[in-house]
Image (cartoon, rainbow, N blue to C red; front, side):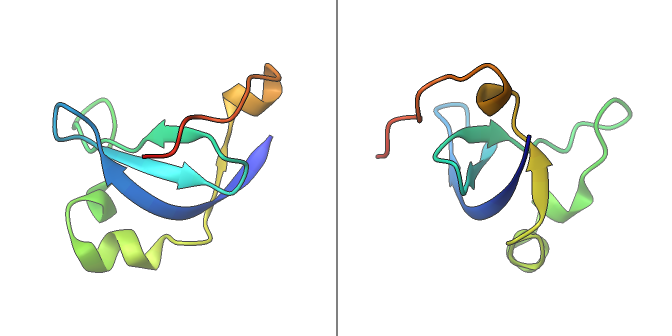
Amino acid sequence: MKKSIVGYLKDDENHWVAKLSCGHYQHVRHMPPWVVRPWVITDEGRESMLGHRLDCKKCDLGLPKDVNE
């Protein structure tokens, strides 16, 4: 199920996590060559992706919202 990115936070390992409009969180790592997301590296890149829709597997599974910090 596609959900929009509404914000970001960092996890305990300093990796970027997207906050989705559904209340779930999803890692958005840039780890070439397996995952190429250079937009994650900069503030401008992350800001440019606000509103972009990601596939939320947690919604597909009917999982509860992630806990807000």
